Amino acid sequence: AGEGILRRQAQRESAARTYARSLPVVPVRARGMTVEGADGRRYLDCLSGAGALALGHNHPVVLEAIRAVLDSGAPLQVLDLATPVKDAFTTALFETLPAELAEHGRIQFCGPAGTDAVEAAVKLARIATGRGGLLAFSGAYHGMTAGALAATGDVAVRSAAGDPDARVTRLPYPYDYRCPFGVGGDRGAELSARWIAQSLDDPKSGVLPSAAMLVEAVQGEGGVIPAPDSWLRRMREITAARGIPLIVDEVQTGVGRTGTFWAVERSGIVPDVMVLSKAIGGSLPLAVIVYREDLDVWRPGAHAGTFRGNQLAMAAGTATLRFVRQHGLHERAETLGNRLMSRLRGLAAHQACIGDVRGRGLMIGVELVDSSAEPDDFGTLPNAPRLAARVQQEALRRGLIVELGGRHASVVRLLPPLTITDEQVEAVFDRLADAIEAAQV
Ligand code: PMP
Image (cartoon, rainbow, N blue to C red):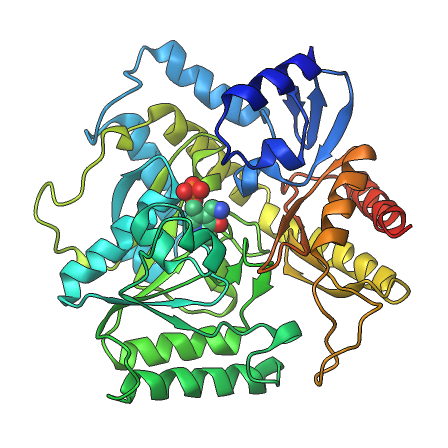
């Protein structure tokens, strides 16, 4: 049955399809971290709906919340009307926010996808500041609609849509393993921050007057690159000093994934706008922005969308937010993520093709390199995208679903659910280690 489905969908679906190409699995059942294919094979899922499944597949509290809405007879589609389900979601979400936003913040429901929320954030900043430019970073990923795509760093992805780039100034993101300034750590972060501050202040630098700086605290699609806390604090200072709203895109990092409930908590910065999606909908489509109240300068109707009122997603999201908080799953993500990273670093010590292991909590990247090549002046080896693709296939053969990312698709990304068990951590490590070994012969 699985083969037939794969063949028919390959004939009918768009040439732009992605996961279905590299991960030819036909999922028919799923629970927690385990996905069962039509062929009866079981997989450990480290993709988690592209990071959307904080509690894994079909968590009982999520299913229960969805059933409760269905059984209550509540309308499923409510545009942006106020409802008890929305009230509960908003309350649960605000309880998790940094204090300043929890007390004085506003929320805008944006639609089903992360990219919708990015559009809303940038639009709001443009209206509030009257400025058109946008500061975004190398390696960034913010989405596929034109504005979000313009902020996305991947040139290949961007150029597929012509050139939506005109108003974006691309700044270097701190990336220690392949650092733009040749020095990593806090010193590299400081150099990068100074360079950014000088570019903003230099009238000849060509940087347009900026409506906002848009940044990920940990780049996800860009190759799982955590920004140093000191650098994030400098971005906060630099933007605050120049009256530029700081928008932090927590679409992928949010809801406990990186070891704190929101990734910004580690550095202690409070963004002017937070962009939230993926896990906040408990596996169903939901995207919002939360922002400082004085930015709330929309005219009524200035931002709309038919599917802003997905009650099932809000209920699933409320259950997820509460469960993560009640069970301290962000702390668990930190502990298990550190354990998995330390096992992977141990492996890197005798696998020369592992250039770098990095991440925060359960957002982990393993950067694969060509160990047969000559290192560059900084001792860094070239990317190994073909090896990464083989590792992905070998992992799948061993019952492990992983995604690739990074500027050259040479980073194996691990985004397991926060409910991963200790045994599953070991199984993920064992299967990935075997896959890396097998991919090299
Ligand atoms: N921002 C970030 C940081 C993301 O990782 C993603 C999706 N990978 C998006 C925005 C876009 O979200 P969506 O695919 O739901 O439009």
